[in-house]
Image (cartoon, rainbow, N blue to C red):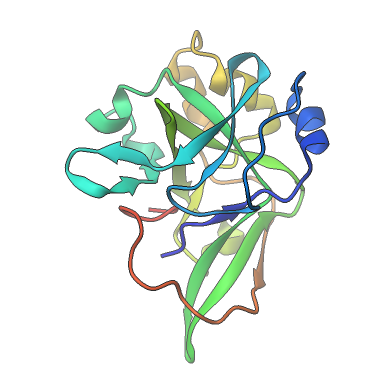
Length: 199
């Protein structure tokens, strides 16, 4: 499955969108894959680079996804519920099965050029929270990353806000999500991470 997203906007765009007062550190490339460093935003509008994927004892591969429905039950995520971050993005990818093999699809909310996934931090590593897909992209995949409503972002990163109060934000994107076919026909070989972005 696909495990990639991108961040194509400029640092100035990020500062304006997320209220950052200091230019954020910037990843080396716009497309983010497991183990890559990318920007996350924490409490107080603090931007930092973090590695995509949590380190776990039972697998050498990073754990890149966290199912919203079981966050409070799984020990790997339950201890991180007070360490919530925003993961800025401009789109993500999924692979769709078709009669001629797999097609790479780029997905993005139609109403947001720059948005934030819900993320959980563990040291310098993070995972993206996932939920059921929005109806408009259910034909591509049955899971999607949680795209936080802008009005829910401040509460999501506030460690003083109990997790129970932010659960309603962990739902499929309410607006339209567009899916565009990418020109690259080749599927990445092997699995670079435990699970997938939408699992």
